[in-house]
Length: 199
Image 1: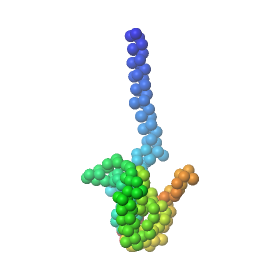
Image 2: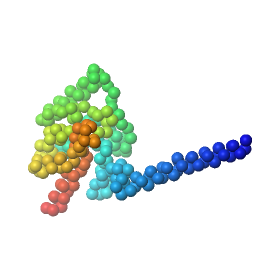
Image 3: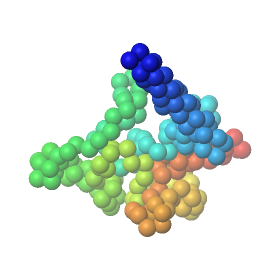
């Protein structure tokens, strides 16, 4: 009996070491390899002051005219109290017939029309997760004139950036191509900073 108890304890300790220490450390070590480190650590983009600008995997809030605006979201993953990350994701779960949803959609569409922007599905409807970092190429092109005017640059200077930060379909067949809003806005800020430095 005592022998079986000791054997069970030894097996439990070995399994604990394997699953709670060795395996996590191995996975962490693999994630820190040079070609995986960026993705494993959250794909964080840093500004010129070495401060976190945001993650290319998570939709961020941009409201200024000089930025491309992302999809609307029912949650603000990165904007909890005092600007701290909330870690929250999700949709409103409102039914298509719910007056709150209908009113929000109409209000958003009217805001876009007031800005002389053609309403598109991804600028009106929220994503299921609330974290989608992409907008469609059409939605980016619609905002092109406003961003170029606000930054006092030509639209032709921004178009190559839209193309550069357009991610293709997953595995070439799933979904639609999408423009990563954070990467696009970050590069616009970086180019603007470099222009000012060279003047």
